[in-house]
Image (cartoon, rainbow, N blue to C red):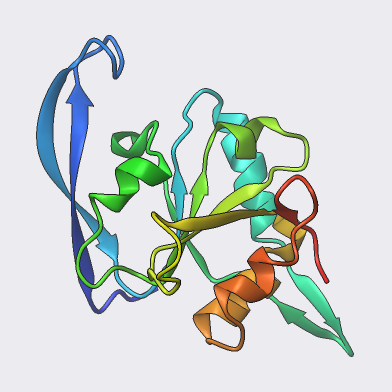
Length: 171
């Protein structure tokens, strides 16, 4: 896949062998593909859980009539994003930020349903402080990613149709 533009995100990361809490902090510039649906790994406890979550999110969605849809995600598997939260993300995004992105956090990799955190970074709702979020099961990733990337549907079209636990499982 060719990347034609890059967004630069400044991220405080940890160096050293003892993990994030005891390591020395330093600023590092991370280059991320611009305009892609970023699928950022933030939990590094189990590589198999990450692989299973990524595989589930990239499975095709059958639209019927032999037509398959895929989530056009760009996996970001970089330890410098370990423990990245929505709150930390807010101070790291370039201007203008991407419209949305996906965080694969501890819940996403350990919960049997692998509910992936979808983050609206557009600040489209002035009544909300911070970024809006909802979770999506991997089988619905193509519907969410395709419709958001094409602007066929808005973030609220999905976030207002989540189940009681905040997870979008389809319409």
